Image (cartoon, rainbow, N blue to C red; front, top):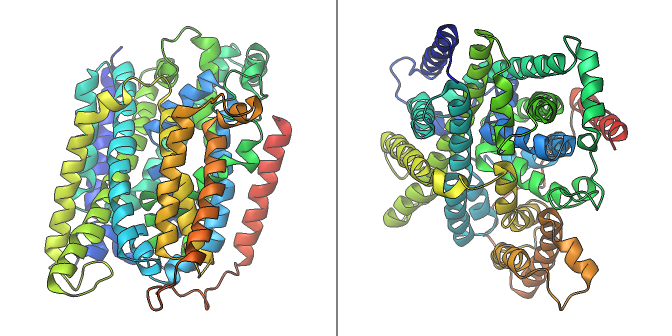
Length: 542
């Protein structure tokens, strides 16, 4: 399949328009060149609508659109729990995490770890996040994006992979986070409208032109795909183990991702103030409620319209083939928008962590000075240059490793969740204790990080074990249950080690005594609305 001339025109017009907009909004004003705060934190001046849109644009990319739609094809509506439970998680982040981060002027997550615990854990986690972002997140986005481009536009997949990576790099290279965040409202608008068009057309195709009839026919044809809580005998129970999506390991994954993930939380850290940041996460929470209609539903519709796909991840690109010329170009541009926005976000966060948490800190060590982001250690222009060089290196590495790392996976979205699940329990323990328990120390944090990886690896490859009862083996088989167990064990060990080792006075510089957790009426009403909508969703499709 290839794009018609009008489709190609629409896509090219989008690419030119969004690139020009990114350069315009991030231009240097009054002859002043960008410093590190401008490039990595959008001058700490993002409004709520840019924060909310950018949170979603950073999150929703090929790994969600293509990967989660593929999981919708294979599993069904249950995969929407990743989106809907994320909406609830964002409320927690806005009310309890952001007040501490913004009160203490935190720029990066490794910076928080050093100010709370010490330099060792900052360096350890900075290198970990760099590896995760480059070899898991970035590779997955451009690989799945290249699948979509190949299936829809007929472009060779390797060529598509290079084009996507290169465009995302150029898109943000000059402007940094501001170029990404201030254009994300356009990207998200295009994504939502394009996704709604795909959902509408797939349902009307099933219903012979009638939207309501299409919905009822789809539910009748694939009833097993419309359960939010999978029963134990379901073949996909190992991916979404029943109630664990509500009261178990999914909370660990979501809290780690939305609360302590640099390329996500970086948008809120760049807010004008706390109220603006909280409005932004509330906006993102409402968008999260809508996203399964855009992402998961087309994958379920493919069960009826394309029942014999070679791989589940082909579901969304296949559904795009139903669109007429012109409209296909618009929806395809929306997909490209999501891929480019998320790729650019991750590139910028990789550059931010390396520059501020590794390069600048080494400069501080050499000169014998201290910094909270490098501005007193190295020339500002050099920091921005280093960030740009790192961005180029990161995307080149991702291009070269995408096929061997992700290409063999049947469901890339599930691959990402399970791999990151080795680390997320420890990350969640480290940050939760760092935020809310002053007795936690660096020794306990390091133990939590190591315990998470070691126990997760053992449980992944040594189970089922004949030494354990059958029920225990069955429970620990799903990676989501393993995450919950590993979290509890890592938490217990971190507490024990922290209590058993002496605290170091003066090391913890995170202030929490005067933090304001109270939220305004607008946030509280919005939070209640989100919770009630979630209750209605799960009650309807239990």
